[in-house]
Length: 217
Length: 231
Image 1 (cartoon, rainbow over the protein chains, first blue to last red):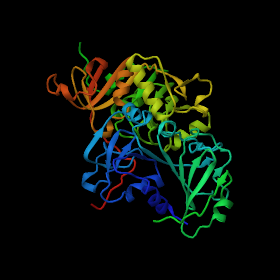
Image 2: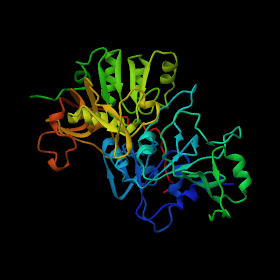
Image 3: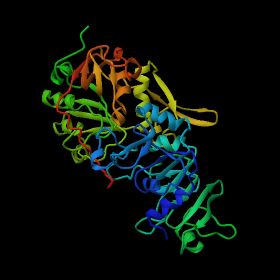
Image 4: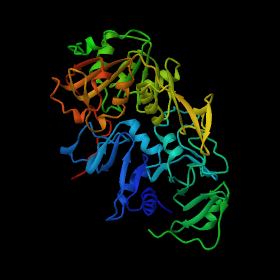
């Protein structure tokens, strides 16, 4: 089974040279730590920064330079600043090659729920609905089951939807799955995980064909 | 025409109860600190605030929430604020949550003379309830309308007395869009200079959009998540 860093490391294998990438808050942010050496990947932060650099040193901290998680960051050679409408212009017009998001639930048609739990304080969707409605390629980073052990990969989402038919790939603590018109297609297993374990933890339509390899991390 | 006023209190003097305001900023980055303090001193009530976030308990729009000055928040994300939560759950405060890109575009449309536009964000979600939908090239979109605020209050890095504005780093965010959207736009700046001192090549908001400008003082620029590396 993978921990959060393992999930991030596996998702990093999906990166390609020249990609513009938007990483959501939480586990997706960790993907930045595993960008392969020598590969050029440009991180977009939807508050208005293309070319996000690492956290600043104490001396470099600038209150006017943050990411979408409100963390202090730095720029890199070639970085650009822009306003929020320009930022979402990039997103809606499909310039961002890959979006990595967390989710509370995903169904076997690629619908995602990740912004609201009825009965709990609603904090808002931020940029998530814009991202899922437009991104060319969306990978979801999530735990396969909730704390009660129930599947988060469902036939139908039970929570309010963030976007329809948008998730292409899910990387969980148990496996990698592509979402196609047949449902969740199992591609890879995490180390120490069996097909049976994935079947047990997946409520939505699961397609298992041939020998499923173990992830190469 | 003189756009320059002495301070924030003069700048917000014409804002009265029940006004609809836009306030620039993302989190606490690039918020009009001086104007918010002046609105708190003035004690205007029943405000509708269009702003990406609602500040934190003791800073930013959170200060106006403490004074129960806000009737309605229009935002994309309102976490990090316990007083906000209390007022929302008790029914004292109304909130309208809008996808961030839609929020930005509704500001931009207001400043661009475009009454409405179609966006895919929120299609199939509760954001779409009651809204016109339409298919373009096989994909579904929602009709969203431009905002119509009484005042826009923004924070810029540098400005000149003609109202031309330049923003710094990610403190730009919603500020230029809101500056263009206000029927009356108030800009507070860290540095206020004479016309000709700012390079026209690097103006982000031309002065035509700005009605009132003043030099702010004592910027706190509070950081929400101070993340540092060892270097």
